[in-house]
Image (cartoon, rainbow, N blue to C red):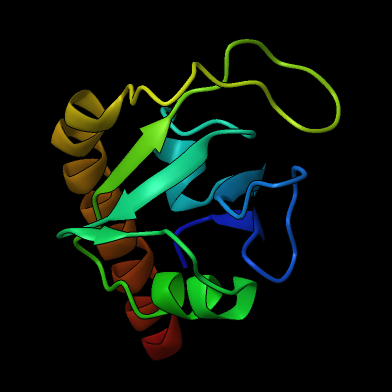
Amino acid sequence: GLGFNIVGGTDQQYISNDSSIYVSRIKKDGAAYLDGRLQEGDKILAVSPFFYLKDLRHKDAVELFRNAGYDVSLKIQRRLQPQNGPVSHRGDGESGGLSLAAFLVPGLALAAAAVWVMLRYRQRI
């Protein structure tokens, strides 16, 4: 997996009147954790190449991430500040998309390849 959990969707809104998808948890030592740029509370706007996460049910968003493959780019909207509960965002503007895509893709690909190699060779030992 990509190393994070999500909340939200049209059927499980995390924030009232907002069916967006949010990062709820970064899994320790997962690809997103190792990359270090994705944060809990970030709103995921799109998944590579250009699939926007708008008006999706939660289970459809989960399935999209499960089938994303190794070369994954995310366009996110950063929260304003850490807090408990629902997160705050900057209006309708989008931030973090370009720089995240430029660094997240190679980082996730490298992490996924390392895990694959470890699992493959561990079975032979």
